[in-house]
Amino acid sequence: MKSNINIGLEVKSPTKSCEDKKCPYHGELKPRGRIFTGIIKSKDPNKTATVYWERLSYLKKYERYEKRRTKLKVHNPSCINADVGDTVKIMETRPISKTKKFVIIENESIKG
Image (cartoon, rainbow, N blue to C red; front, side):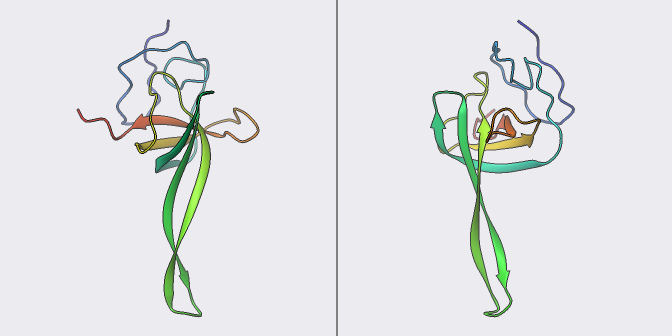
């Protein structure tokens, strides 16, 4: 079992440890690239979660804003184990599978 690896960001590292090779804290996965904050919409038993966030897009013709939603599949390490409805911070990484290219690095819903 490895100790927590510093991923180079000012985020809270998980208190639990895990044996997941695709964990940024205890495995071999190196997060790099973009960082987003979103809400978990659904969760899969195979360590996959669907994260979404809303953004506003301006429509020039109607001079108004419309809401749009971005939805991504992300890796949910067992040491973080975020649940449906939690606000999480995700970061880009190398492709983990065909659809997963992001990993959860912090669960912001946890108090303390």
